[in-house]
Length: 353
Image (cartoon, rainbow, N blue to C red):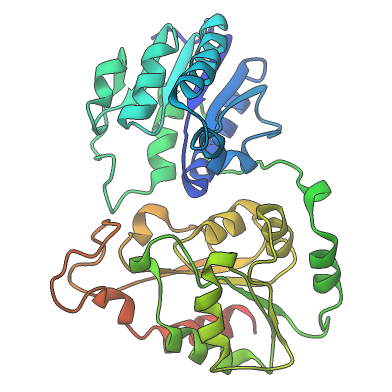
């Protein structure tokens, strides 16, 4: 297929912050190959932080689902089709569906794009709306194939030569909370700093309370320990901190925005987290070393990769199941009970020596 006359490209990657971050290397490869192309993106508000104002992009369309949940159906459809109308008016040469689910493929079908591109193996009949399907030997949810590499197959198809996974993220410095920046600036500069982010969205991606306690106890006197989580995860961090305390432990639960987490990741030496948005944010900043824990999900598919990144996968027979809810009738979430403490402690000693 001729790729020399491409003027406008639209990327469809809607929900989940981590998934949006994993798609940024595709946008970066396209920008390098086609520096003068109009490169746009449609995203949901849940994942917009790394997409809005991203210097790789010309325009971003945001589906404001949080707002739409509070609106009547007529006004939701009115706003949705207003966005579709804007997209259609651009007459995109290429529309790329990297999500490959029904909702994203419907948008591709409505986009009016000349070439509607997707990889094969999409779910929910998403292939019906594509007129160019890229053949690949890997399934969309192959647990042994990294999602970034899968996205970059699209870049290869579009003649991109530089397909090394690289991130470009927006400048969020104007959004940093002053109290958070003050806290980080005033921690003990003679010690290295570890960020622990124990919470994530799936219960079967969470590690045990005692596991986190053992790790924090091992390093609370030698390093600064920062703990972040959302307000709804306060119960989790409270249970951890009921069992361990120390003057070098800083609890920021419920205090940070996504922009603040970016700032923290740029100013710590190591991040320890389950498969979570924080791990992906840390990876996108390209600054700290990262240890990521995997239970229901696959390290081979979504872990940060590179020389300074480490992942630990549960050895449970059913891990990774890739299911949001554990299907076991007995020993629910048994994969999350594995004792990783010694492994984590040894890696920390290695990378922060």
